[in-house]
Each structure stands twice: as C-alpha cells, then as structure tokens.
Image (tube, rainbow, N blue to C red; front, top):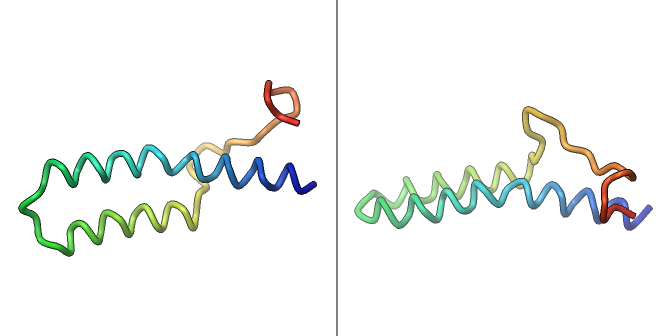
Length: 68
C-alpha cells in the first residue's frame, strides 16, 4: 500500500516536469520582463503540483514494467 502511494506521488510529480522546463526556458527568453510575470509562471508550476491531474488520467498499472 505504501509503495503504491509512493508510485502515485512520483507519477504526479513527474507530470509537472515539462511545465518546470517550460518555465525555465521562458525565464531565459524573457529576462527583461517584470518580476510579476516570473512569479506568475512559477505560480502555474505550484498549482500544477497541487492539482496534478490533467485532461487525460494516467494510472500506474500492475501490468506496466517497473510497477510493483
């Protein structure tokens, strides 16, 4: 049970990685932007980590390799 919970939390956290990379890339491109824009972008990452469910639900199945 604990291992399944860990796998689900890990999966949800990994779903936020593309947004983090997008924010890091945007920060490099818009260096002269106001401070509130950068805070807004990181706020989006924060919301994504709090509500990690996307439009397409992703579940860890026991049939998948690496799933315990």
